[in-house]
Image 1 (cartoon, rainbow over the protein chains, first blue to last red):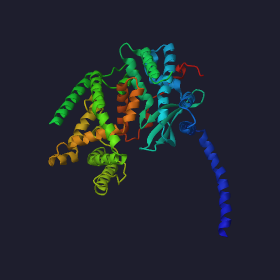
Image 2: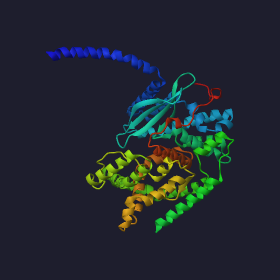
Image 3: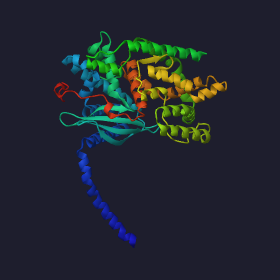
Length: 211
Length: 262
């Protein structure tokens, strides 16, 4: 008897507590950290969906990844960052060429890894604010074999208010910083410079089967 | 015998690096240049590249094939036990370093893990304690004390290092209580066996990762150098990196990237 009375009450509490909690969620929705979390959530979901979809060919998966890179990553900003101090000395034409070559290079190196997907999943933990435009989203890649990998996503609001990924930090190692260091070393060799760096990136992209 | 030769060699290179490091100092005027300088402090690059190539060849000839066989022949459970055993032998030196770094709680974990795994985990073959102790070496201790890392250094056989890490490694080798006990019991080479086995274990777990990094980089040496230094920084901070230390990716808005939005 008692149970019969309690159950509807619990049900009612449950019904009301959900909308009661909703406003706080809505408020969190407005902060840039929550926006960044949502962005990574959507990237993670789409990536896992694409990768685990057996009806898609490798080529189709690659195309999906091209799309992520262009819509969810601030490629022009990343390209500018990884060129480091050589950005200043580069001509406008070199800058534009570098940005497009860098994008193709990234696409080629990421699409290589598509085939090696083996059931990894992404778990989003939380996010922290870095400054008024940027936040860092902490995630963990859970693997069917081996220990989980710590992956932090640096997200930045661009001029038009869209949040985009600008760096990925794997176990404390920043991909953008690694590339900047590598590119600066290549461009700093005597007689290489930005044009030489562009050529090397093009050759690498070609070797990997990209455009 | 051989070991003392290697150690002398390491010490000589360390000294050489220190001298070379003191000889050059970054100019005060050029700011962007100075940032790069601090990030990639590699005044011995030609020599480092030479030894990097030597190590690469040695890896291709010995370490990589041996690691592949090791991984192919032994099942994961056995390999995990090997790693647990090696980690357990290192707990005393981790404990010493944690104490020197003022990490008393972590030192307690080292002590607990060592005794629990030694007595309940069949001499350390099984990680019963599950305390997730992290690797702590003298290079990290020096870093906590504020010693600068010094120039980047690629050492034959040992691979990427900085002057600080190389000196720390030598101290670890001699301060390690397990090596000390082994020496007193006529097992002089135990330290070398541990080192070699740890190398094979680590290499067998990074075959694909390293292949991929090599394949995707246009300058493998520079990529490894950057990865090594960032990874060391992460280890020194015990994985609790301060987000404020991330590189600045802001550009003046008026100088924003020139490409038009598609």
